[in-house]
Length: 203
Image (spheres, rainbow, N blue to C red):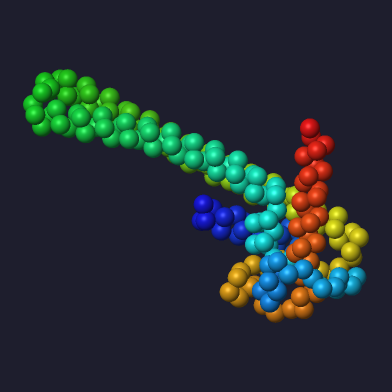
């Protein structure tokens, strides 16, 4: 689901860019597993790696798994119905070619197959819209959770700005920065701890 993951990353980044004064950024000069050596001071401009957050945030991974299961189930049913319709059409054409149907029967079956094809196209379109809605709701849930936590996180840290960065080869918008300003590890620790607490309270 690589394409889906990419779409998710872009959508969440867009949410941060348009709706959050306290958003986050990351940097490519520090390895993913290397923690910041010192905590940035109040008033600093810091950043976090959005790609890492989306990959390592437990809530994002669990929601992706749920949505992927739903999408696979929908695709399987659409493919099953499409395969059956295609088989029915091929069987009908084969009977026509062999002269096994009278003209009146052929016309009736042809009309019936046309109705079935129209019905299937409507069904497939509805299911495609359902998949898009499932994905959009998931992206909104992840973006809202991250955005809410960043607001709480920065109420204490009081950074002047939190920037989100993406990309492995050349991260943007932060291409080069002091690794001590990378708050990715701190955000992930807090996000996952908050998610564990949330799940416990829901039991």
